Length: 116
Image (cartoon, rainbow, N blue to C red; front, top):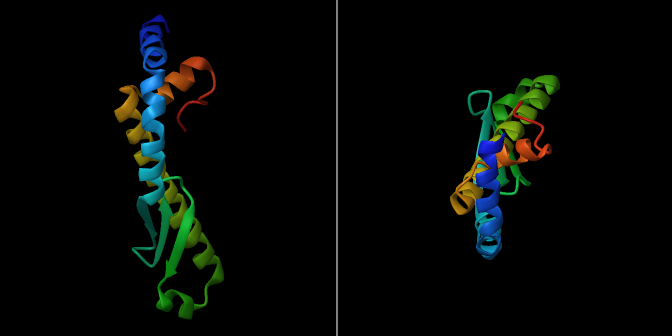
């Protein structure tokens, strides 16, 4: 635990610089697009870097099959994958500014909930 205190001190020392970069990162993430697929590409979900759903594409052949439950499952899986990719990219952006793994900091402070 105490080994991470140096990382927290460094984060606090660089807080002003991090704040300056935050707007740039937010703009980049808002413009970024991430695609998650399910069903071997039969469903494609696109989200931005904030994890907001932008579009869903469902292969017409899948719709013609008429299996609503399968379509629902594939849409859910596609959106979940796109959001997972988006979150990973956002974390990498923040790590590039802070030089730290923010999940480790959140865990140290008791607010991260750990990795699933």
